[in-house]
Image (cartoon, rainbow, N blue to C red):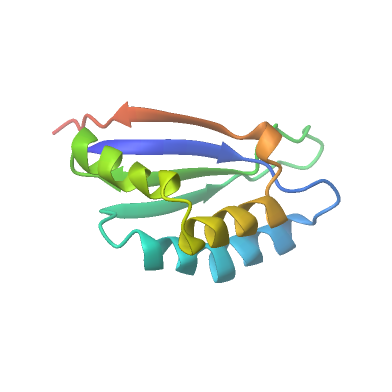
Length: 112
């Protein structure tokens, strides 16, 4: 299993509740609409304990693929300059601070 992991920060001034609501109710449906081959799509929202400092990200997102080839095929979407790619990008910049995004691939290893 290959996972694309990304860490995202909400736009400055946006409440965490608003960020989460937008991600779950607007952005996730867009992702599922345009990337039906995803094997998994998880959002892990950061819980900041009282008195602790906020981190540089609010959510760790996981996109699961069967192989690197499936991931590469999905990423070709971004080079199409299609209305769909523009729609997703425009939504991303409406609620996420893209200057804070960190993204990378990992290979999952599960202990038995």
